[in-house]
Image (cartoon, rainbow, N blue to C red; front, side, top):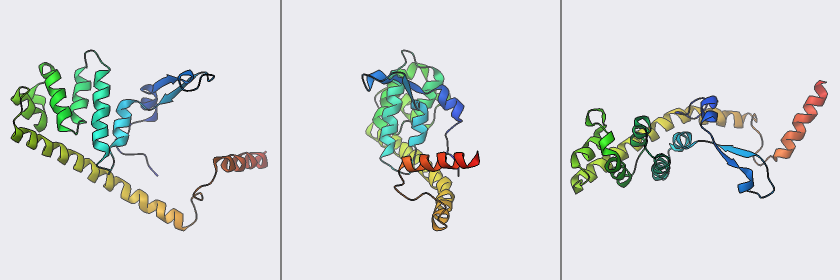
Length: 183
């Protein structure tokens, strides 16, 4: 099989994982739970589903808002991963003094030139650029997943996959029985 495109190594993701105290979730629980970090989640959300792209933009806004002074790297990442024109307008307006037109993509350059007051034509153009960006990611996702899906269908046809709905407890029993046989 493979791993989702655009997703880095497990070690890198673990290093940027978010940790939450279990006591916040269940009063008697101890310890913490690690969840995927925001930047990795954004990469995972880049799917073939158009409705995921506004969610990605929202995650980007949340990530940037966590920093008092976002770094240039974070701002570049945020600009590249914003797919809602209003979010991009807000991001560019809030951080224009830290952005360079020379290094900007088309959408950001248009908004920098607008100095916080884009015209309707500029907003429409930026919306098209952002839509094209999302469509290209969707195309790349389909290109990546088509052979994987074909392989899974072939494995299913051969009976090489677990039965749908197999309880986890059954899998654990099978695994522990297999270990006892091997001793």
